Image (cartoon, rainbow, N blue to C red; front, side, top):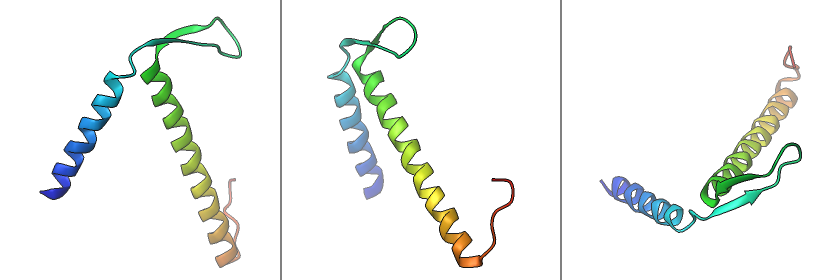
Length: 77
């Protein structure tokens, strides 16, 4: 029950944060014309890219550790 309350509080903070960041900003891409998107989309995409990068680093370290532990390489990489 306590975890549900904590999730609800965290969700409320996320909704509050998002509602405060709805201004439209210009995003200049390397290729193509600039885009007009809400700031919360830029924040969310930055978070997701960072999260995926962190997961990839952790997985790579785990594979290297497993390879050193067993002495066998993983075939196909």
